Length: 194
Image 1 (cartoon, rainbow, N blue to C red):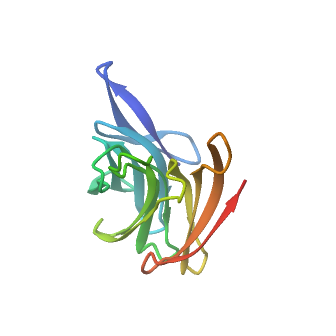
Image 2: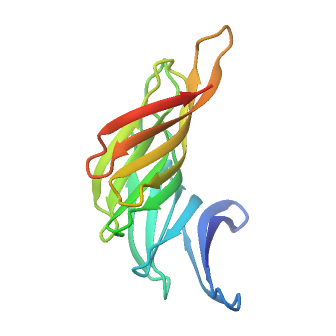
């Protein structure tokens, strides 16, 4: 069992803390820290790797570990075009364990609009970036991704997010779901729910 989150170091700095437990006994197998930053999601592949994501130094930061030992395999970062605060909230591994998808909220650097969301695809083996897609709602409100999943055959990636909306007298938020081609990040559709 793999658990991740934020953990204070020296009472003032937060790190990612990832812990592996024996599923049968609950015995702690290893603990690994990465930071500074705060972890938000963890997933494990059948091929013996564990992936953790969150925000570190204002970027999406994703770390891969060897599941058996906690040995760090790679770290990769995504800094959005606005060079603002980027905070990954969810990740998903393709059924083949070849591609890792990470999504979250990302600053866009525009003075007249709030944050976008970004979804990034990486090689699960090396951490090399394969593609990035961003969503910027027409209302210039805050768009923040909450969850990403991959279809069982692995051909599509689905992201659920909150999007700002300016239709009424007061700004509102809707939630929405977008579908992308897993191989390229090409958008397929977006559906909103108010």
